[in-house]
Length: 202
Image (tube, rainbow, N blue to C red):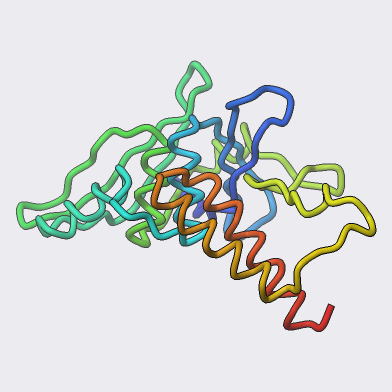
């Protein structure tokens, strides 16, 4: 099988149809990308890991990763394929003391688990040829959070950046404690944007 390694680019959402998310994967040695439609819980789980949001309790995929580690099971790689009906599926190649095991999985669960344990993600050249697309300037960049600071009216007084960052960090912690992880991820992105501006002197 002619395998092609994939890199996770990010999550995108449909601004018209609520609740529709897609994970974007790109071939490691090229520019073509594959969008895979996923559900909100999986999008939330992937984004929490990408944004390094610390949750008070482990999410489902955190639990899976912890169990693999506890029982001495290693996820060697994830292989994504496309079924005849157009749906993406995945196989988990695992190893334990008894040998190798191949386990069927949803692609979203496989990706969420792979990024937690550092396992590589692969597909075939055939899948890339069938489902891949070339990004261009008209293609929206993957994102899961809206930059709500753009909604502020010109001339409206704002707190100093340091104070705003402290407020956002407190809000992010509250969001994580109440398991509102999408909001926590949004706030973390806003914090990073403000910190970047502060460092550059903007």
